[in-house]
Length: 68
Image (cartoon, rainbow, N blue to C red; front, side, top):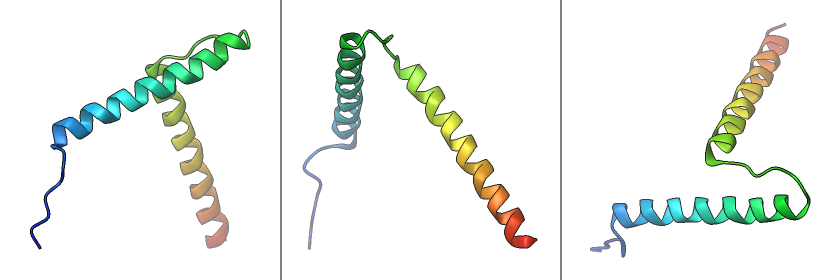
C-alpha cells in the first residue's frame, strides 16, 4: 500500500497553531464575558509546566510510598 498524507508536515503544523489560536480566543471571549482577565499562550504554557511538575511530584510520592 502506497499511502501518503494529504497534507505536508508544514501545513499540519500551521493548522495546529491556528487551532491553538482559535481555542485561546474562544477561551478569552468567555473570560471577558465573565469579567476575568484574558490569558496569553505563554500563560497557558506556564500553567501546563506547573501542572506537569505537580503530576511528577505526585508520581514521585506514590513510588516512594510503594517502596515503603
